[in-house]
Image 1: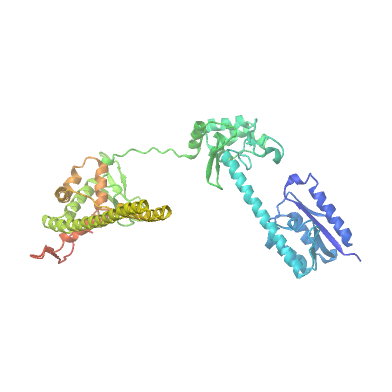
Image 2 (image 1 turned 90 degrees about the horizontal axis):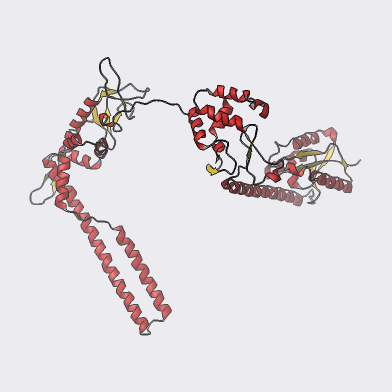
Length: 517
């Protein structure tokens, strides 16, 4: 009794179906079966225009496995033209072969001479791996080509609604941009015009599209999703967007609408038009600084209207915590009191001056010394360059020797120059800086109150209270944290710090701070 075999053939590109690729594979497989003396069982299993990347996406492959696993069919071999026709995924190809092996069925390739032996098993694995590698490389090249085309303005994927490819076959359409569908173009143009008026709901826009013949042309009715899909896509005014690469590109295709009409329609469909009342920033000076003590969120401004007056408040809009609200005037008054507390006393100012300016002088003097040492070293190296030139002139150094030595010295000079540029010190008029600092710190509350520009007031607030201030449910404004400089001032204000007689060194005795927290 002759051994029975089934034939499996496959092409991945639909265009190959018509140019006898399937026929060539079948002819070769039948010739192989005849040479080996196998009886070919019918039907011939085929997958036309389907990739070999996954087994479960190929109906022909699934039918073959079901057919072979029925013992009554008595199949001994599965014949393929090449193993890459069987699978281009190593793992899934070996798994499908293992399923057949459990029923005593062997794989046979007409062009690759696979045998049932350890060597044949190794060859099968290698050939399947090479098929997967080739498939992945082709995919990489295709992605690169598609990206290049996309950046040149050619849409490489399925056309958006209202566009078609100019030719019938993929080969003819390669590198060609989509073109507007002549019957759908006026329908879509009218859609954008009507959407831009804001007079119609999305459902009404869809119904009006269907009345104009949209459903008859595309074979499905326009819905709300259709309207959203069209008015959301910038493709219609010539700007393409690819989610895969997250890139915009100017398309070569003909636009159906201009950008102004598209933007008007897009905003009308997607943007909720809410009228906000403009609030004066001068009335809400702590906006962005004051927070809710309960949840930590910034409090928003509000101006509720009473029977005879309009009020200005800071309030917490977080519904998860209890609503915290305080009148702006009351909040500003409490904030001024906090500024009076955080500003230094005259005694503290003297201690602050001693600690800050003395340290500043030390840093600048150290920087000056380092810069001076580097300058002296550079002068020595420049003198070495002159010596190298003189040695070359006298014939002590050859030209190559002189060049090498000069390069070493020049490199060292460059490195020292970089080190010198990294050393930063500022020349300043110490007395002027001290006077300005003293005036600024001692009149902090008065300065904030007299500043006219709200932006300047907020800048001052951020310098003193980088973490903002908080408002409690009892309408009390407290500090959340001070900047490092004002933390030092607060510590000095609440301490017994004096400059020791004779030594000039500070001695410190701390007391509890008086700043409200």
